[in-house]
Structures are given as structure tokens and as C-alpha cells.
Length: 466
Image (cartoon, rainbow, N blue to C red; front, side):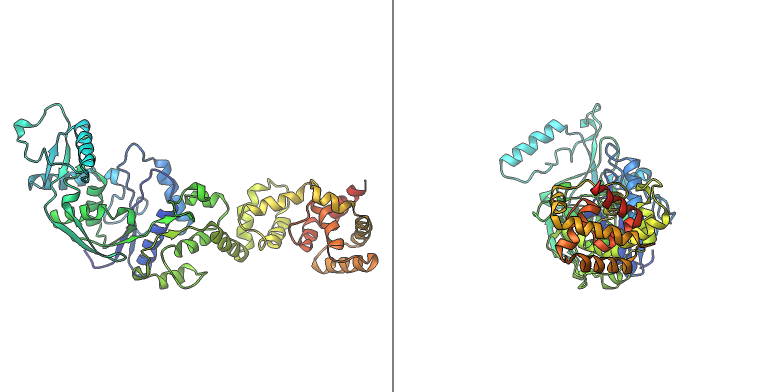
């Protein structure tokens, strides 16, 4: 095995890619790219009841959409495959047998009822729940024939000490958690066992993951040591909370990358925000090339990170404004069902892309220009003003004389209306906005003119006088 840095992102396909897991993938990817290492994607699908191929595919698609490419994985052959735990059961058995033969693991026949009773007694006595080792010394003749056992790891009496890249020196008394299960009664390896075998055989040098895994780490180190595998270096990142400091969920606006994608956020805006969650790059907007250069495990925070939807919207608005118009046109084209020409759509997107917070706002705004507006009450009041009638009549005369409308023509028309009517400010602009959009707020009037064009403007003004 080479000394090359190797990290992994190992999602469980029991749901869509959570924002917290996406950040874990990002941090691993940044570290691998910075260190000229390798980023491995491994699917941890040993939870056979909850894991699905649909969720697995969704996770892969979201990672691709975020442009977090992996060097080895289920769809990219590498020297340490297969990269799905469900295809590695034969590999795990070899190491299960090794531990059993060395007396470091043993079958346990305790029923769920017995374990629950033990747990309740321990809690009542104020002790941490742990297995009491009852089956450690069972002879073969004492083992029940009608119960499928689980396999427990025989935990040695020791203090597990390791240096975490973020939390520094940590120690755990192994006596607190007792002998834990490494293979279920169904013969399937548990998470803590499978992950050790996979990390060891895949040559993983650094494990960067959420601090919710901290309690798993001492157990995993014990298995590494029992099998004489080198222990990787660990970095446990702080959890991501919502602004109310509770675990991130849909009530905070989104919980998964799929939610954000469907809400109209661009991948670069999401990545930019994730870079600021638990990591301080010292720059508000940064490309992934810049993030790779700036990333450092030593600069990761121990404090919980706060996912701020409002800040993400600020990032998204900026990235939409900077995005290539053709890219945005491709994203919103399906909403229009051939109602408009590609040329008009491109022109329209170019005109409004600096005005929107999310991609889905683009069709929402533009589709309103393709149908007659519903006049809101505030707009009705504006149009009932005596001065509004004169402004709109002069507007119609001025537009009628033009062949096409553009920004320069708009300025000429507005200057002419102001001169002929003597109106200015709101008394000039509000009636025009109200008659063209049915609202008193919205896009810049200049952009509305250009988007609607001569024919539609005249139709809307004349309809008001009909």
C-alpha cells in the first residue's frame, strides 16, 4: 500500500443526500484534491430493510450534480472493490472467522427480552446500558440449539486514546460500552465491523465525518487493533443545525440536496455555503479551485455550524446573475412548452437573471408576461387616479410610433411622456407598471418594456380603456 492520501465518502442509501452528508463529501473531496490524494465513494447498504437502489441512484446523481467527482466507486472500477457493502459479505466473513478463532469474538444467544430487561435495570440503577458478558464463557454444550446467535466483539479492558484532527486528544473507557455486536443473527456484519474492514482493505488514511460518529470511533479502533490493521487519522466535523440550533430538517427550508435543487438553487451556490459551515475560508465567494487551496483540517471548527437559508439565497442570487444565459435558458426551457421563441427566451432570461433569488423564479416571472395580468387592488387604485389616464394615452401614442422597443427607446418614451403630461416620479411610473403588470411592484419598468414588446404593451393599455 502506498503512502498516498486516501479518503472516502460512505453514504447509506436510506434517503436522499442530506445537506450534512453533502458537506462531509465536500470536505473529503477538498482534502483529497488538495493533497493530490484519492476520493473513494463507498455505498454502505448493509441496512437491508431501509436501503434502496432508488436512494443510491439519487445520491450518485446529486454528487455528480454538485460536481464532486470520485476516483473509485460503484461505477468506477478500482483495485479495492467492490464498493458496495452488500457485495462484500464474503470478505467480512474471513475476518469474522479470524476474530472468533483468536477468541476475540463470541456468539451471544441472549434474547431481545433479556437484553431489554438488563438495560432497564442498569438505567434504573444509574449505570450506562451495556452488555454484561453473560455469553462470554458459554461452553458449546450450553449453547441453545434453537436460537440464531449474534456475534459479539470481546472488548478488552483499556482506555482508547486517539488524536482527532478537530477535537484534539480524546479518550474513552472501553468498559463503558461493553461487548458490542459485530454480526447480527441474520449473518450480516454491523456498521462498526464492516466499516473497519472496508477502511483497512481500501487503504483509507483519513476518515473525515460528522461528530455524531465520535462514539463509534473507539469501538472501531479496538477492531483495527484486534486485526492488526493500521488505524486511520480521524477528523470529526461539527454537526449542522438550523438557525434555531436544532438538527437541520425540512422545517428549516430544506434537508437534502434534492430539496435545494428543486427549490432552484445552483450547485455552486450550495457548495459555497457548505464551505462556510464549520470552515472559515476567509472569503465570502470562492471557486472550488480556491476552496481546494484554502482548505485545511486544522481550520475546521469544533462549534456547531448553522445552515442559513437567507445567506444561501444571497449566494444563489449572485451566482445566477453571473451564470451563462444559455445555461439558465436550458434549465427553464421545459416550463414554457414552446410558448415562446428561443431567441425571446434568451433575451428575457438575460434581462431578468439579476433580479431573481432562485432559478424557479425565472419562469414564474416570465410566464406572467405571456398572459394578461390580473390587476391587484393596489394597482386598481393607481389606475383610477385622474392623472393615470393621460399618462397611459400618451404612452400608447409614443409606443405606436416606434418600430421596436429597446432600452434607448424606453428612455426616449419616458422623457416624452414626462414632458407632455408634466408628471414625474410615482405619478408617471406607477400607472404604466399597473397597466402592464397588474402590480405596483416588480421588475424594473425598462425590462418590462423590452420583455413585452410593442404589440403586447399596446394591447394591455388599450384593454384598460376598453
